Image 1 (cartoon, helix red, strand yellow):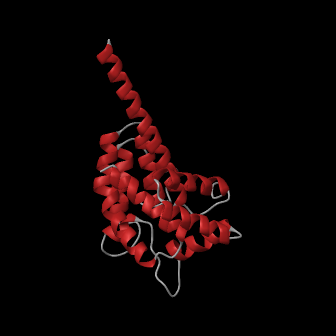
Image 2 (image 1 turned 90 degrees about the vertical axis):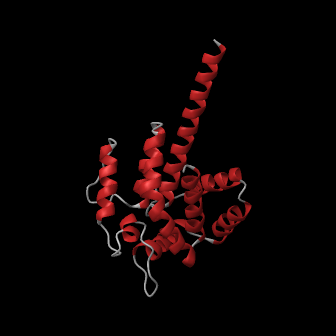
Image 3 (image 1 turned 120 degrees about the vertical axis):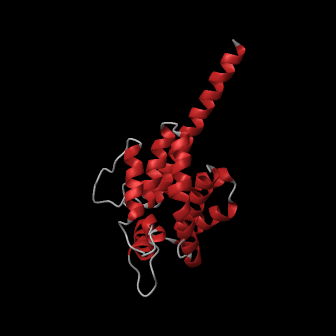
Length: 200
């Protein structure tokens, strides 16, 4: 009986870890969406601070706290930053959060990588809620990873990270860190790197 109980305990631990990871992916997805009042609020920022404290990342925690202390309207600040960073910015260049921009060689959206990503979703039982969304936006990819982790589909999760997520994310991160224009997104991208790299 004892070995059998140990096996169950190990399974329980595995499920708990997957559930935690799923929640982390979902949380990180929110940080990379266009900021909306429904989720981009004090609860999100408090959760971010709690996560940084639990990881023992004092520098990043101090950066977020300083940003919050000096920002009178965090939602408006993040909307402005998101637009300038990821959508349109003149005279500076934007840093689009789409895999195809970094992987298909021509810097455009809806390329072969977008199709490959959508096909991967569908092959594993998922599809986009809205067809007009590029499947390779970082927030959607993190949502997909959250769904895989939630169902403890470890092999599929690892395959997606290795073949479709990490190759473009590393280029995106490198491009972003050269600019590093906003503390919230800088910290969020570092967290995404940490949790997706750990899973490889």
